[in-house]
Image (cartoon, rainbow, N blue to C red; front, side):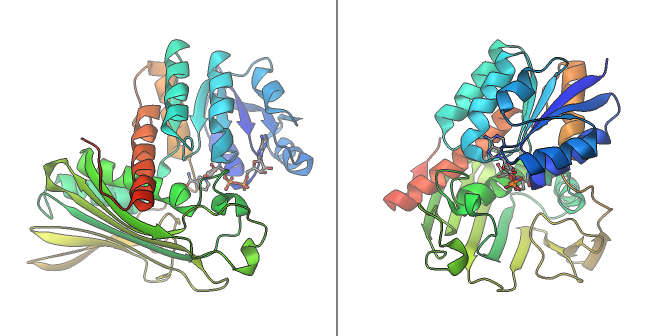
Length: 345
Ligand SMILES: NC(=O)c1ccc[n+]([C@@H]2O[C@H](COP(=O)([O-])OP(=O)(O)OC[C@H]3O[C@@H](n4cnc5c(N)ncnc54)[C@H](O)[C@@H]3O)[C@@H](O)[C@H]2O)c1
């Protein structure tokens, strides 16, 4: 049976979801929706779907089995819950929600309707991170591991990313990917979070319309079961046109791995690239493992949703995984607000 798909939100991620669904055998994008009529019309033309202005109608249309939710995080819960209550499976963009209560409501709604709810933490599928995971599991750098992500950018072009009430602010928007990667690499849960953070974006001309700034800059330290440690340095509040700087480092008692891109040293941590790879340094010297060509966007999440629907099996992108990343986001923000370490277990 062909799966009928609705895509809610026709911006950057909506377009990537559409491309992923169009590449998927046994699926057809049937409805698309955006409050911006031009975007909805362009996506309808691209996919052959019917354009809607109201997401409720796009989701409730005949022949819809699955819904891609690609709008700001504040509205992920209402669209996801309404979709699952109509018996639709959901692939929700990250962050799955702004609060843990909202995430729990989404998970409960999917469970009571016996449908799949997946959250699109697609960095797990990027070739360089899959390589790191493989090498960690092969024991190449030993155990436990220490992970260090640095992600420094000029203020973001989308105001929703900085607006606390929409995507929660850059910390909320970005770090979920890194928390998810840390859980993916270690298979472990976090024990505690200590963070310090601030807003550097305030006063930058591009962000003049932002009413309520979310935290955009932080140093975060997370302790995991098994002795693993994650450290994140984030600054998405640099002045417009500042070249970016990103680094990923994972090390252990036997060696270290970095994910490098010689052609683009300033690349964004989640960018796809044909020149990226993983450099491993250990007592035998240095080895370079070139990354394979990455798909642009959520192809593996779409494939996983289809597999989960067909088999009824849980996916690595299950809503509970999205919640675990969100729990770390919320603990980080709590630690920044209170100045105290947040204990999770
Ligand atoms: N997985 C990733 O790596 C990744 C990367 C970027 C963004 N995201 C997430 O994807 C989501 C969307 O981000 P984006 O970058 O595509 O933003 P975007 O601004 O490019 O697109 C969002 C679209 O949603 C539309 N929209 C907003 N509210 C709507 C509503 N109620 N009904 C219908 N349409 C509505 C907007 O008009 C806009 O066209 C966010 O949650 C963001 O955090 C995920």
